[in-house]
Amino acid sequence: MCDPVTGVMVAVSLIQAQQQQQAEDAAVSQQNQMAEENNRMQNEALQRDMGSFYDEEISMKEDLDRSLEDTAEEKLKLQIQGKREQATLQSQNLETIGGGQSADAIIANHHRNVLMAGRDIEDNFQRGVSSFRREREGLQSDKIEGIKLYQQLIKLREVVTLLKHQDLVKWD
Picture 1 (cartoon, rainbow, N blue to C red):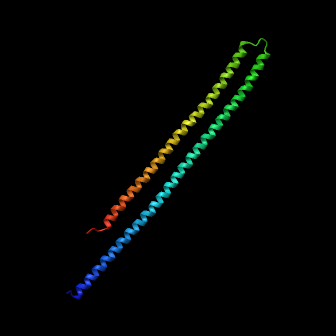
Picture 2 (picture 1 turned 90 degrees about the vertical axis):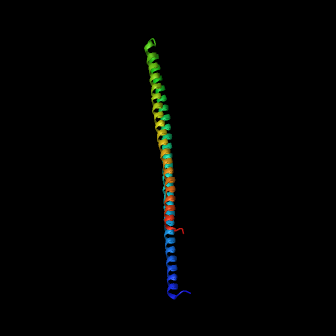
Picture 3 (picture 1 turned 120 degrees about the horizontal axis):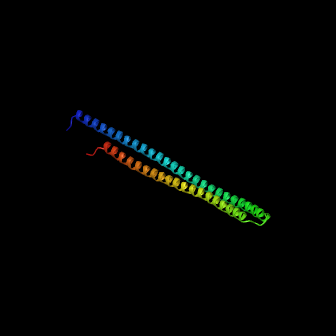
């Protein structure tokens, strides 16, 4: 049989081992809670970032739509102004004695100038469209990189948690 001192020492050793295991379990539980909280915060940050990207895309699209409307309005104003000026030039041409070749040339030049001004407006709009596409592609690239970074952080966190857990759990 065992003497009482050995029995007490075995009991104390068992209690210490149990307390140590409880402390390790508490540490692992705390780390898990911290990891879950960190994941929650990362998810919220990703959602805010994606929302921000979405808002920026909407803003860019609205700017492009406004630019399209402004371009159409400018072209319409140019056409109206061109027609008025052309009518004025034609009436002046009819009032001159003999009609003259130079008056027809003036009208042709005016018509060409109106067309060129319209083309300039369209070219400016197309430059804006190209700029919009580049900005949108950059935004899409930033969004994809943000998602990839988030995914890498999740994987890294899982690896770190696994390594910490392996250090805390003793395999016999």
